[in-house]
Image (tube, rainbow, N blue to C red):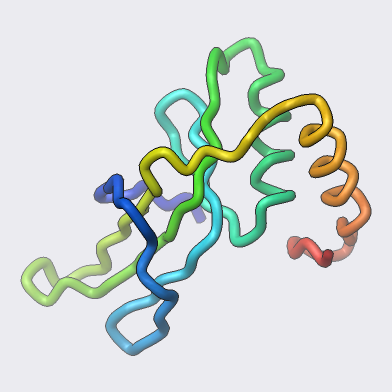
Length: 119
């Protein structure tokens, strides 16, 4: 399922995660490849996704930031609304050491039989 965010909002800090009948909010990390955002619950898969995406000739830049994804039911619209909250200035450091460390930790937690990453 591909989720297009209805809104991408820059914030100073993330609200706490929440699960209620009308609202789901989870904190993690977001990767932006060109103008498309992707949310991940853990840093290692987010970093690896962004780094691999940047290797495509179609992607000239990428960003990786702390973020929260939120789905809430909007009674006025009568449908779910999806928002991504990105922490302004909270980019994750990208250097050679970080690159190797995060990608290695990602690979160690991959389970080919699951879509989940297990640290």
